[in-house]
Amino acid sequence: MIEIKQVSKHFHLSKGRHIKALDQVSLEIHPNEILGLVGESGSGKSTLGKVLAGLHPKTMGSIKYKDETLPDNYSAKDFLRLSKEIQMIFQDPYSSLNPRMTVGEIIGEGLSLRKVAKKTIQEKVHAWLLKVGLHPDHASRFPHEFSGGQRQRIGIARALIVEPKFVICDEPISALDVSVQAQVIQLLQKLKNDFGLTLLFIAHDLSMVRHISDRITVLYLGQIMEIGPADQVFFHAKHPYTQKLNSSNPLPDPKREREQPTIQVDNSEIPSPSEILRGCPFASRCPHVSQICKTERPELKNIDNNHQVACHHLDKIN
Image 1 (tube, rainbow, N blue to C red):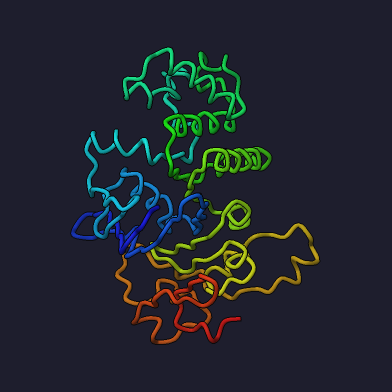
Image 2 (image 1 turned 45 degrees about the vertical axis):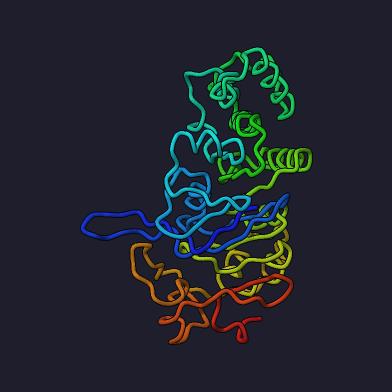
């Protein structure tokens, strides 16, 4: 469904400096799958989502949606046309909803822009409020009257009411309580199955992403470190960075937590995204680093069952 080829996104700073938020990212997203996207803050996850939605123009590369090459800079007509196919659920359920609009106006805005009859919009808004676990009476209320989890449900209804095929979920659970996170995850899975959606699910928590995703992509400083089936990446991670992400998830069993192997990573030298890196971006923190890691960028290598890893020293890693 989505084919991303060598996409980069640079944010220019003063005096000719720029930040490489994305650096030659190539990726495919298949119909009816949930692709998880994980990495530290600043790794480029949200930037990739916004580039796919047209909210950020890409610096270079190409993106195809159903064999159509998407424009570098979206016009108003492009947004109106493509927003029926591609929608986004935003991270912050508080700032992503207009406080001056009622819930009904927020959810139905996409249909209003398409000149749909008011009665039809009202009927669809009420139907979607029920689908996301809210009540039709909530349509007349304002966002400040709802909890964070309820607001995120409103954001989900707003995105899906135009019946898109591809939905970008930009950390939709990171601002929510743990119990509410599970409810939102279950809702997204149900809606995905009911409407045959394709999701890009962006998050920090690798265990949560593994629970909802078919495949997982691991980003670090704008580059893909590892990609593969969710269980394969979670239980049999090959890249040292993915292994470190896995080990940073605390286990609920104290005994198992003590027995969990420690991945030795140097946390004191995290490169800045504005630095020009010739080799592997993880080289300054990797326990297996050698000279080639500092001079040559590793290519993604297929190791098993569509499991790909970008590392020069796969033979050294368990």
